[in-house]
Image (cartoon, rainbow, N blue to C red; front, side):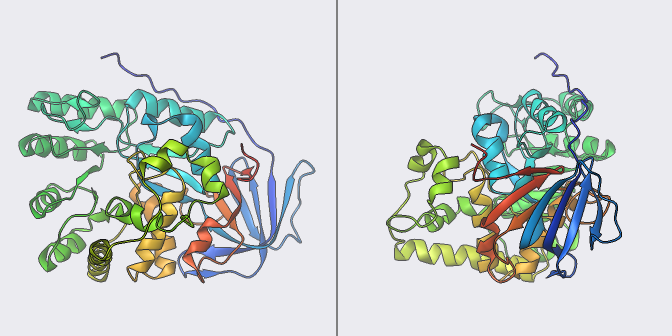
Length: 402
């Protein structure tokens, strides 16, 4: 296989930006601050507060927030962007306020190209944290799409190579035998790289915790002992609730209320059709759905930290809107609204090792934030009411991006 090359490119600088008359979310306290202003330059927040007493450069772009609510940009913590049509995924993610993506499996050369595009342009492209190719065994789940590792020597070599190629973490699949996962985990931790995998059974969860995995993707059955183990080990759960009947819930109704004009603008018709929208939930579906929410509630109350991944690219997981369904479902599982917003912002940034730059709105951090037409602390669905998206100090209007 040819070795992909990851280039470090210089991002185009944007003019200074002053956003006035906004109420900014303090993620730590879970409250909005009194109305103030945000000044950004060279892609970072330089100061926040009252405009008086500050010198504003003449080339500053001024945006009157009109009293709107500002939250940090949202992270979708489980996507596979590099397998999709990038003309669709890039701007649909930005249009729905996803300024950061945690990509849990895409070709390393493709994802590096996306990273470079995001870093070197002012286009509506999220910033990426990614694993690159998934580590599989000789009976892969996805055919020849990813790495097929057969020996301990290959396991060690690929970890080192992926580190050199710019992977932010290592993703393993169930097809990789446990003795090779053990070697991958040891090598990755020695290189300072997190390891993530699936958590679809009690055995898989337990073995992964023992090997020091950082997160477990998808929702599997648990009991009180497993919940205590996950909480004690600090292993985060990324349940991707939408895959467990969530899409049926989100798209129920005749016609589905979720499928509005913005949805149709950014989601391909075939992707919607494949999800079979509409209709009402059967009693069996309702019971299963309540069970899923109860399981999430039990894990949260047991101290397990959550993420908001969607597994976008899978049928019914759409690039952009689905992350908002995930936030709603987490809230419906009795996770407090402020905590839901925290896990989608600061919690995700901490998982990515990027909390120094992302996750909260503070001077010195990257200027990634959303201006909302409604207070999300009053109704989590207001995260969908996006007036403008700011990424690296560049302003995007979802109504005119296409």
